[in-house]
Image 1: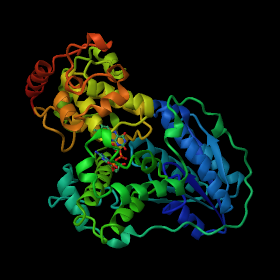
Image 2 (image 1 turned 180 degrees about the vertical axis):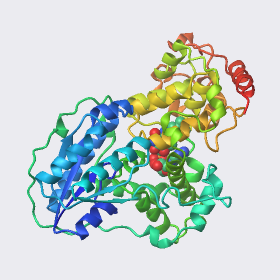
Image 3 (image 1 turned 45 degrees about the vertical axis):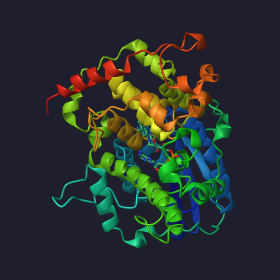
Amino acid sequence: MKNLVWFRNDLRLHDNPALSQACAKADQVVGIYIVTFKQWEEHNDSPNKIAFWFRSLIELQKDLHKLNIPLCILKCDTYDDCPQKILEFASANEINNLYFNIEYPVNELKRDEQVQAVLEKMGTSCFSFHDQVIHVPGTLKTKAGTNFSVYSPFKRCWLAELDYALLEEHAIPTIKQPVSVNQQDEYDLHSYKQSNINQDLWPVGEESIQKMIVNFLDRKGSGYKTDRNFPGLTATSMMSPYINSGVVSSKWCLNQARARNYDALDEGDKGLVHWISEILWREFYRHIIYNFPRVSMGKAFQEHFEQVPWENNQDFIEAWKHGRTGIPIVDAGMRQMIETGWMHNRLRMIVAMFLSKNLMVDWHIGEAFFMQHLIDGDIASNNGGWQWSASTGTDAAPYFRIMNPETQSLRFDEEGKYIRTFVNELSDCPTKEIHNPNNRSDYNYPEAIVDLKASRQKAIDIFGQIKK
Ligand SMILES: Cc1cc2nc3c(=O)[nH]c(=O)nc-3n(C[C@H](O)[C@H](O)[C@H](O)COP(=O)(O)OP(=O)(O)OC[C@H]3O[C@@H](n4cnc5c(N)ncnc54)[C@H](O)[C@@H]3O)c2cc1C
């Protein structure tokens, strides 16, 4: 028996249900990964993230090689070409069954359906698994039998319905019988050079990333609840690129926190419990994207907010994108993303709210720009975060509660350490001036492009006129 594993956002050996089951059922196992540049471009997947995926794949290839599992790199333009590509590979290599872990956005689900139909017609069975969530999307319901659209009741139900057997991890498979692949790689992973950031900021390799997360939990887990909002502190795990590409599973992460919290998920150490609940936010957004597919098709979750008359001032958009708005905390956040491919969560909220409210720019523009730069860009969490900030989403910030960037700056970057790290022009600016966007001519730093108070009021007025 020879099984095929199709790797996507699950670039790991440990707790990988598709890999584990494929190995349990066959003596010989082969892996494939399909590079789809055109599709990725349509999805705004950033070159920073693609380079990171490829580096992670090179490590995965080495790890799989130790188990006698070859990983072949195939290439298609778009998802439409995947069924034929896999069919050809499966017949050339006498594959009995295909195994993969499920991805929830609309295009990915459609692709998998097509692959399954084509393969099963030719006698190859397909087996799919849920590795990105603990509860299968669609299985958690409100008392009225509807899907959750608010996080807190979702979380309560998630916990109440939890059978601890769901948290059992799949062990790394044992060594398989050697197998040769009847196909050359169609893409050289080492040849990709389009990332704009220093990729060394993001080490790769499953084992070393596990150590990094364990180290975070041991050293900073307990302080997470209080410190996580301060971008100058490096008090969050920075594991989002790894969990999103599947170098670690969310289940493994939850279990690591649980093991340090006397087996509890929702009581005990406040820091660890809060970290666990952030991972559940991630799962919540995966349920949202599955249960309300319109959100991954560009629609506002709260449909009446489709009518917001966005102004989309091009000068504002360019200033925001380049971190030249004259609001130091906003510019620091945007520059962090451009320089490193990642942005602190507090800053993601600040810059997203600033764009969609103070600048009255359509949140889709910000959502796409984030995806084009983030190393952890993830359609479910990014869409959820943007719609939360723009007040158009599930459980979103109400439209009249607009964060003032300057107040946020004073509160969460009091000494200006974070601003100084990313806004070089202000590196010598005294602390008492660094948050204030005015009178900056002597620092070669732009004047604020909007008045915070007036633009806030204008946004409230515009949003207030939208009828449900
Ligand atoms: C406008 C906006 C856009 C965002 N875009 C993305 C995105 O593209 N990809 C992405 O992974 N996250 C996104 N987030 C959520 C959050 O900002 C990041 O997950 C977090 O900053 C990652 O840093 P960390 O790994 O240090 O998180 P930690 O604070 O250590 O949290 C641990 C993990 O929990 C999950 N998590 C934490 N906060 C959230 C949240 N608010 N929503 C969903 N999951 C969360 C992440 O998987 C994270 O890695 C966005 C948030 C906003 C407001």
